[in-house]
Image (cartoon, rainbow, N blue to C red; front, side):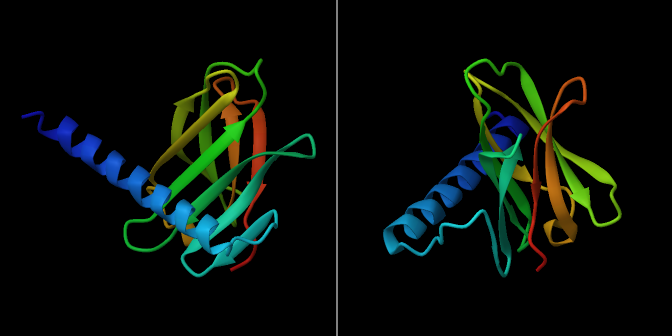
Length: 140
């Protein structure tokens, strides 16, 4: 039943559940420092910023089957799909995925398609290429 669609849905559910478990565990332990960016081995985290304000977070996991997760709140007037571009040390970018905004809020996670350990930052862009927010990962 479903074949590739069922497999994709199962993979997405596993990603969401895994991230949710990690988030709950971090909150319960009180282990997450109140900083704008951090790195702890295979998990890297940075603030997404727009106009000097934090508008979201991006997480990149470079362990087995690397993945990227981000959430963003650009305000209630932001509309349409947005695109995540991963930024590499040489300044090149690679597309990671896209997701819709609802009342300016959206979230997304997927396999990264590239080694997240080699990524120095990310850009969130509108469909016309306008940069809506950017993040810079700390040096590992």
